[in-house]
Length: 288
Image (cartoon, rainbow, N blue to C red; front, side, top):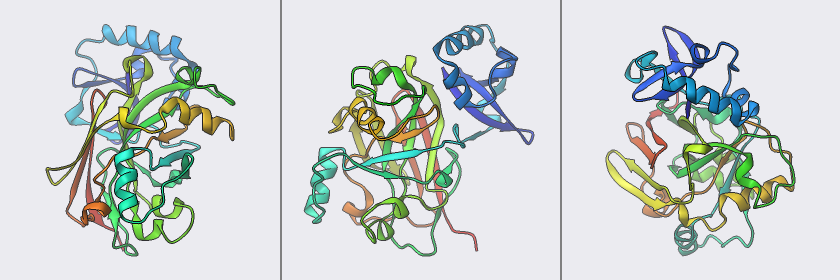
């Protein structure tokens, strides 16, 4: 099932996407939660029930072209991201003198950076090195702590497309990456949450990124050094993971800093992951 937040006629609703249309969950089940966090927390039985109801919805709902898709989980409590998690990206960073991490390298993207799948992303007035990073996103579906690698798939609620927009000059000003990763609007995600039951193997998806139609990144999610189950196991040793928590799982080679091509106003960045859809964001000068 593809769970989306969408706005039409000035009202934002929660819906399910099917065949180019989005149907409000309230039409499928009037008692359904009104947030994706709530749907995920309710568990797979509700998702199965909603999926069955969606099959009978036929032409109900709204054409996707006539609605505005919003960030699917705007109220996440955590947005955690792993760095240097594809070997080809580690290699290109090493050539630039960046040391190779010995362990999983984690940082926060502050949740205030989260924005919609087709919203503008702002070039900060204080940064001249704005970069892109195509990534597979994971959303936690069940409250958990001390999760084994074997049990990790059971706590995943779904998957989504990420552009981990980065201000490189700010990223390298401090030992942690958080500031360079957390500028307002630098967390476009979406276009919806594809529930875990529809993704048989999240480590076998093609992921691509274009800037102004030029293909910059093209890789398989199978290229992760630390797979998703290892990531969840590692994080859950430290903190309780909650439904709606977001995880960005790393980017492959050919980021802008490696190519000497930073983003400027007017650029259009598109990220697509096989089976999950795409997001597309225009770089805009930060409003005064």
